[in-house]
Length: 171
Image (cartoon, rainbow, N blue to C red; front, side, top):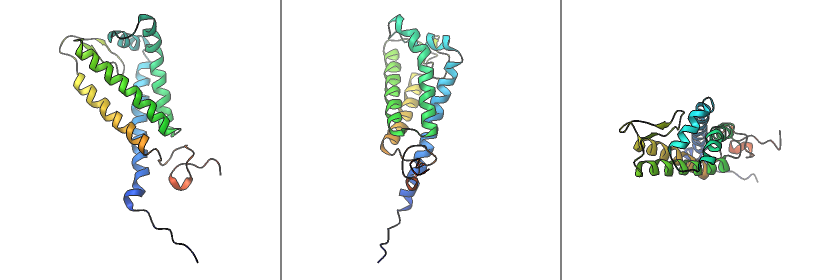
């Protein structure tokens, strides 16, 4: 007797495609943010310094290193490697960014976040902390989705081919 496998509901079949869209969007944001900072590392250092949170010895290291961390995370997401773990790391990084922006606002600093290049001190009233926090919370939500639903299409993750990824064990 041949056992019949119940077809998955349409909403379940759509989940890997939703995760694909989320993965590509979040990866694209991190690639863009890192790329824009990597082409002008001195501005990235100035943006980190403007937050006044790190000792001067770490400011340069973080200012130079952060863009390349963001690029690496973005590439891993776009390619779909270790999606859940990378989503946890990006979510953690986004939490750090949110705390830093909230801290700057609470201390009355007038800075540009430097999230997409530039950054540093700006004239009073030229800040957009609320928008930056809302954007980062939205991105955090995307990362949370990938922690919950990491299986996606067009990914290199070691999922079974039937589940949306490439099965490199059979390739």
